Image 1 (cartoon, one colour):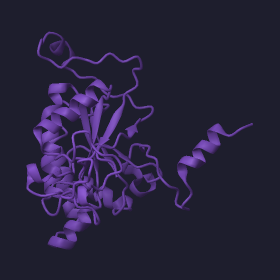
Image 2 (cartoon, one colour; image 1 turned 120 degrees about the vertical axis):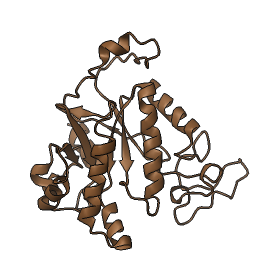
Image 3 (cartoon, rainbow, N blue to C red; image 1 turned 60 degrees about the horizontal axis):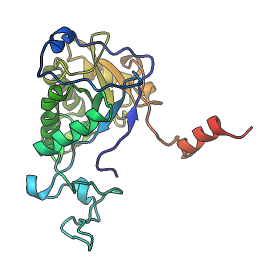
Length: 269
């Protein structure tokens, strides 16, 4: 598991709408400065705001511990035992830490990232969902200061957990989530748009796998967003989706996708 996943998602053949306030930004000496890029292709980063540290939150969150790590154990190199392949240069951090947020945003800004795609558990507060929402909102509140755009990658399976633990039907839980997005994110000037409509992604879907379910979920919105499921998942959302986004994945038969693609494009003649 990566502490900050540097997966770059490129959405092809999509024109991202320009900020209507460009002229105002140019005249504002305190506006975020543009990073000069030799390639104008938009680069988006998938971001997981799901880490908690004992110093900030009072406990070690599940994504540092998983089922077999104890961050309170420190090795001879001064590193804590965490569930991560890479050890963060700043140590195990907290996604709600304002200094960490500023640090991450500046790193992304000067690396040429144009937008953050936030892995989002929904608007509910059970389990880690509440801390994910708080950290997401804290991150979003700072995006304008550095000039980065954003959208969310909705983990829609969390609606099933809401149903299991509270009795609220999963469809109703998902409807509450998208209404939250509409009321709190879609009108944000930093939110990504396509043809003046907000962009919404989902990592799957993994639970709502029928077109009729998504039609019902979006029925609570005044305007349906440009909706992008994971590639090879458009059949689950049907007419509700406006494309798909790419992710290194495994095929249904278990074949290694990356190796398959490498053989296809780089095979010896």
